[in-house]
Every structure is written in C-alpha cells, then in structure tokens.
Length: 49
Image (tube, rainbow, N blue to C red; front, side, top):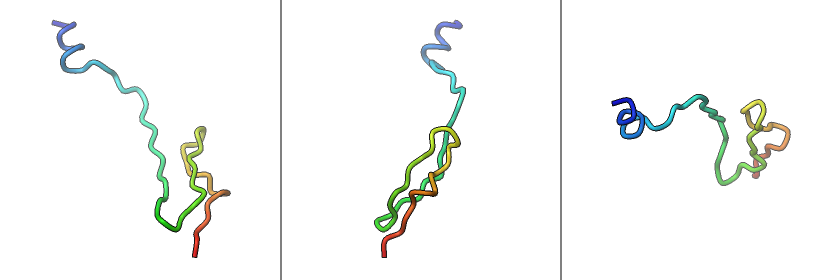
C-alpha cells in the first residue's frame, strides 16, 4: 500500500518553493532574478521610454 501511494498519488515531496516577483513588459529591461536572495536584481533594471 505504501508503494502504491508513493508512486501513484504522491511520487515527489516538495521541500522548497522559490518564487521571485519579476517585473515584465515590453518596455522593461535588465530584469534578472538573484539566486541567493530570490529577489530581482534592482541595479540592472531599466525602463525604456
């Protein structure tokens, strides 16, 4: 029964969810996600006019 549950219903255990709030759009550039702090790298962000 344990094997059936673990393979058929729940084959993986999620231990970490890394979500990064990233800006996007046709006039926004230089947006990159920082791997350590999971935030956008604000120093490279720019907006085109």
